[in-house]
Length: 614
Image (cartoon, rainbow, N blue to C red; front, side, top):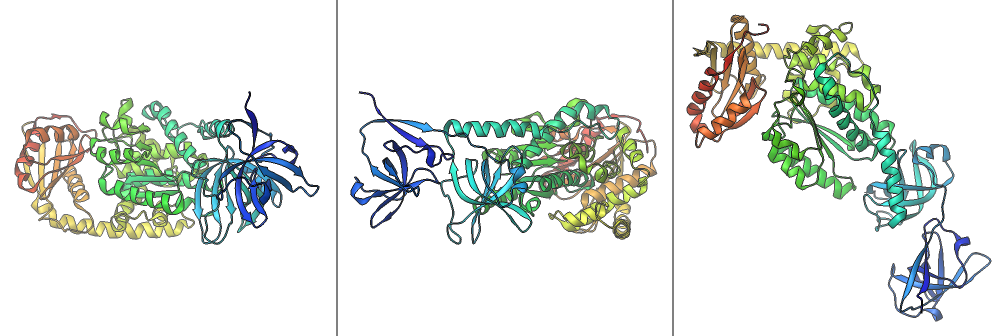
């Protein structure tokens, strides 16, 4: 004997799809003295009179019911049936769904939307569902009672059918949800596939030329486009983005360029009026790598936001850091939590890192070097993310280039590009002002202050006055630091003819103030290079457990030297890295002399070249 057919109505079905005598899968909605209310869909319900109830049930239990009659007023009389075996068939009705991007033209009308849930936020009143489809992002509000979660069966990432009235609240389009149904099976797969295919097309970056001629960045274009596509897609599906960057002028310029592109794209794509604040976070990193402290902070915020606000776990974007084995411990933690990580960096990369990354842009991958700065890469990436910010950010690569002392030909090309707006000296002043202000900001992003320094604010005259004031303060402190330190610099002539200069910045420099040890060593190095034009110069600024290196004309490989010393000096606790000729090394205090002498020996064996410029 064949099984009895039991029908399941899809969320789109209405009363015309219900047949008298047919058996349906329902769900217990509630109870009354005269019977049990049963939902056939979110919008269709009937009553099983108490005389036709066969078993005990709880709310939301599944139940099989036969339709006894449909009354003229639309009420449905049901009776419970018990079947030993049966076959379920879905009753599917094709409906006309409204795209989220079209809701603004449907104010006051009732619509049906097929979308993915990107966020669930419980307020003191309604539950707010952030919905994403192939066209955009909008919110839906569902109310049960104040502070009570509506539709608890719906979760992040579910494909849902939402039915409700389009309203405007505080200038924001919103659906007042009358019903929300979680789709499953082929129906959900079809909607998800449509959304994915549309998002793939929508996230594809526009084809635009680079700002300047650059063989290296032309070769990097596919990698830049892939990273831009993943960032655009994260914006379109309301995935939070955490942007980590080195806290110097180059890292800041790179990150701020990307910030302008992402924030403007978030605003263009719908969602809450303050979405750009909770969907995007820029955070400076003190070290030129992703530290354990950084990932710990990021995971803390991300997991709290997931629990409290129903936000997705974020996409992590690292710029001016992320390429070296020093990043590996933090990246391993990110991997445990399933975080996707993208890197845009110009430090010498270690191959071990790529296993943790979903995208990696680095000039060394195509034969370039650190002369292609993170600020150059970040700006070109930002233009691919959102070309609308082009005019606003096109001077940032020039600021980054002079701030990072790039000697690549692209440096002058970017300076020439904006020469009608900013001189090279003005770019240098912006870079110095960034370094100075970021020192006082510590771990804060200083979003609006940094925009003022980089002339991204509304008042150019105020920008000029502010930068002038910061540069004056920075130069005064640098001069004070140099007056204290320069008399204590010790010189050695190495076997390869290089001049080596040593400075103990722990005891011969002001501490806990600007410039910090790294920049102090850089300023000392610049002065020594001017004193010895045309000669190879290496400067080491060291403290109890660290050393900072700067080189001109000595072809060192600092990451390789660090790895070799770690193997050669037992108990040194050695770590570090950076660029080939600019970097740092850490060690245990008790082994300082052995580490420094080992480092000097390797510098003495390095090849010497005639500097490109003094």
